[in-house]
Image 1: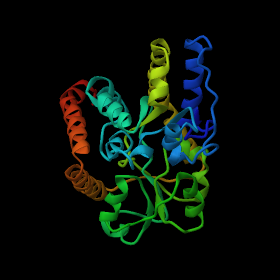
Image 2: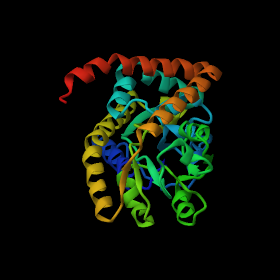
Image 3: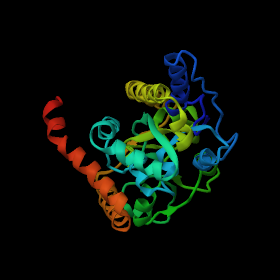
Image 4: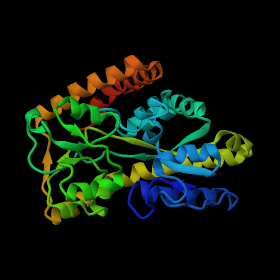
Length: 316
């Protein structure tokens, strides 16, 4: 099983190892996974194709990497102002999101099992102050599948970079800023050494689903008990990531501050602009893709149904 994440990094990287360990334990050793590091067999963005072709038996990846083939999967990967990790998990298992996720991967010839849940990213690292929309004009930025067009609408220039290319390009001045990952991941990758402010919150990705992929015919050939063991190990991994992430990110912020990083909050004006432009980008996607439109409507309705309870049940 090739992973999209370095197993030595916190969060998603750790999740790969925890999933493999859990699966081996609950199957009494019958399902022992050999973890293959990123890029060893196939480039990370091409792991889905490698699973379909048989070059990989399985993959542990991010839903967003399949969005080029099935745009609806972007709604599980990076939804600006979308559901947080708890609501995303609830929508998948209780609100119909799981069927949407299953059907999207099924059309691509693979079994896709939700197998991890990443919490909010940081808002990004930037060269200079960003307080108004005018500050975005001409700024070269790295952002994601949906958030990229959002900042483009605000005047930024989108620079397509793989995650592994961002640090060096930012350090060398080839890009002016953008998103990387969570505070824990960013700290582990050394972004604190760049001497740049770190903006919060991560409006562009409140949650992200990680997936276990296996070619459909190979998945169906497994005994029902083994399929259930994989699904159970994936659910356990989601639970582990949900429980671990908040404290891990808090410790990472302490580390970043101690190393001299200035944590800044986006201005109210920029948060309003992000939200307004996100609504326009999502509307355009929905108008051009019926599957995306139906899934987005389902996700929004589910989150809105829980809004009253969230407000009333949480202490001020």
